[in-house]
Image (cartoon, rainbow, N blue to C red; front, side, top):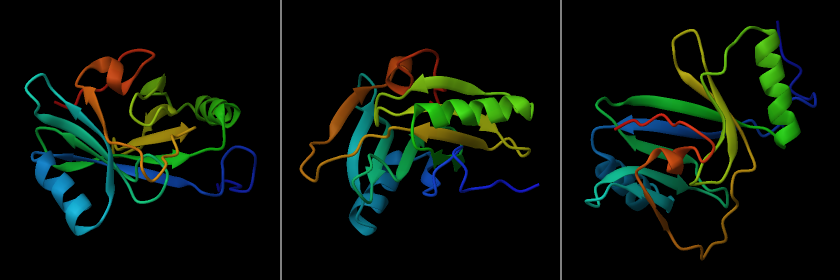
Length: 162
């Protein structure tokens, strides 16, 4: 079975960003910003200033790479972009028809301000469907967010990696 990618369900610009779990987010941010050249849009820090997550961009969209402190190093998720909230609803309806349960969401992230939901693939990898990701001006200052559930989902519970 193949999907008609030109349909109204999703956009043609499908892959939006990847999320990575790491034991050392400071090293990862240093690599992606100082070696690769991405720009840090937002940092999530705990009360002691310890980096818990970072969102880096390669173009005007808020993030191309999301980095999360976690007890293991692996892929956290991959995110696919869809054109608007109606298309997000259509994706959710399509998942329901195919009996693929929503694992997390529907919600709104603080950093990036996007609407989203996540499902799991057969190997338990997280797949995010997202829309309305913030578009950043080149001079946008880096944001600092508290490490709390509200930061990662302003509409309800969040997956706290660390």
